[in-house]
Amino acid sequence: MEECKIINLYNLEETIAKDLIEKYTYPWEVLPHISDFIIELGNSLPEEEYTKIGENVWIHNTAKVFESAYINGPTIICKNAEVRHCAFIRGSAIVGESATVGNSTELKNVILFNDVEVPHYNYVGDSILGYKAHMGAGSITSNIKSDRKNIIIKKDDKKIETGLRKIGAMLGDNVEVGCSSVLNPGSIVGKNTNVYPLSSVRGVIPANSIYKNKNEVVDKI
Image (cartoon, rainbow, N blue to C red; front, top):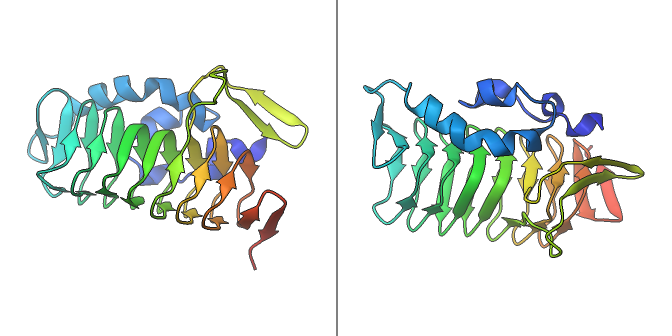
């Protein structure tokens, strides 16, 4: 499925994790390696630009982090990022340049590219959000099936066995997710696509489209 490949979802020049992501074909293949990559990269970051806080947490000196935010390692907060009141970063998280992690937003095992916005009551777990992706208030990634079985990526009659029990959403560059939407486990949303508010998204959504419901996905004009 070509639309699921990293090369068709992301501009890798817009993330500090380029060296990790470009090793793989599909984005979910990156997920098991985020933690180790952060520790390796963090220890090589310039000390004049990044401050190490606690165990394996590196924060750029220009980043704005509210005192009420909780940040567990390994985590990297990049240049000009903002981590707001009561944000909960559980670990294995990269927050890209000028990205926003908002009030009561929770992150776990994620890569946020530069300029990503998860600003209001979002849960983002086992996911990769591309450049300028935005999740509206209350929208979340669901990262595990109710039966706890491994996740299969499906599109029409095609499927890919991932071998992973936890996969949230892979959002391409410039994806807009409407308020209070749920991205079900293993959702892949192509570049420049808009998801209507209150949606329940499942499977592979093509690039440059508008997702209204599972039976109505139209091309952008």
